[in-house]
Length: 318
Ligand SMILES: Nc1nc2c(ncn2[C@@H]2O[C@H](COP(=O)(O)OP(=O)(O)OP(=O)(O)O)[C@@H](O)[C@H]2O)c(=O)[nH]1
Ligand SMILES: [Mg+2]
Image (cartoon, rainbow, N blue to C red):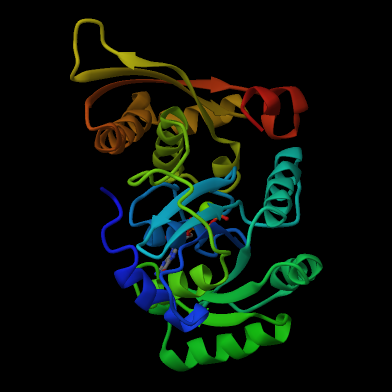
């Protein structure tokens, strides 16, 4: 039933890399880059659906998230990882560990650098780390967010990126206006081994629903907060189930953790107004995800200095 066109269009798409023959490829790619480089937004653009949360705050992504791109000629699994950075907390160290352990599991790495920021020590640090895996795994250089700058700036950034390390390919993209997103998919697919489909048709991620829900709440909570607060926020789902006797309503009980009592006030806002907004916004996204109405009960809790506390980190899933 699902075999339509597999030999037809698939052959055309892979002819360039393989010299013909309906080859099907499958495998893993991951995006690496400083926090805020646009990795998760690009992952969502390639998957064609929002599977990873994004924000203008650094270190939005906190675990490796798999997004699945289905094509006639290939199945590409993208592992979106946290931004690689100089860690200041135990959480930061754990995030970096997630990134490095992902590198050994993928067929190709995409090193993302935003077009609107100069290449700096943070990028050179990543390049140095990547050089260790680059002998085994091809690394593509990706200039992201091209919509934010003029064409010549993109060209300059490509040249600057090339000086940081040697790349298997270089490509500028914009996840926002879609510029060359398909081209990037082609370049990544070309680096995958031949292989069968690894995930069923239609699966866009293997993230458990509860994780996606917790992330959507965290994303809503990140908006409008500043400084250290974004780092201090964590979300857990305590309970999630259909309301008894109803098939159109899901009850969700979630905890939103901060690190200090003073942060609790900020998250709550005047008479709880901010939290209410966060809840309403998260609920809209969760309802779209689950295709059902949602009752969301959101409680703010203090987990003192959880980013530095191994026991609390474990409890929060790190
Ligand atoms: N204009 C523009 N903005 C973008 C593009 N891609 C990402 N952004 C913005 O850049 C910010 C960071 O994007 P993310 O995708 O969360 O970045 P990230 O690399 O996943 O960040 P971490 O998870 O913190 O490492 C967000 O505000 C995005 O909306 C793009 O192609 N164009
Ligand atoms: Mg991210």
